[in-house]
Length: 74
Image (cartoon, rainbow, N blue to C red):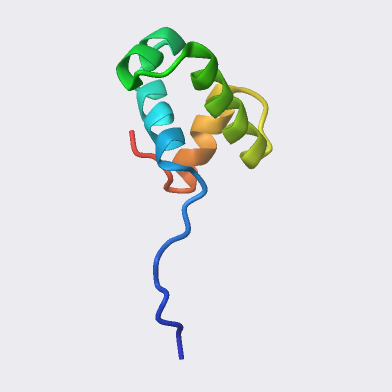
């Protein structure tokens, strides 16, 4: 019998997802920072944290992997 906890476990935090959803819309680090009211450094931190979680090198690899995992939609 399956457990009652049927929720999908997401890899990304809500904020990381927001950053990557803007990233796939071709937004720059600066545009993402302005849109989310955070600093460019914070945007870069979110991106590098996600790349570490996924064990990938580079933003585009991270995007491909997140799409494959169903974490973000394009």
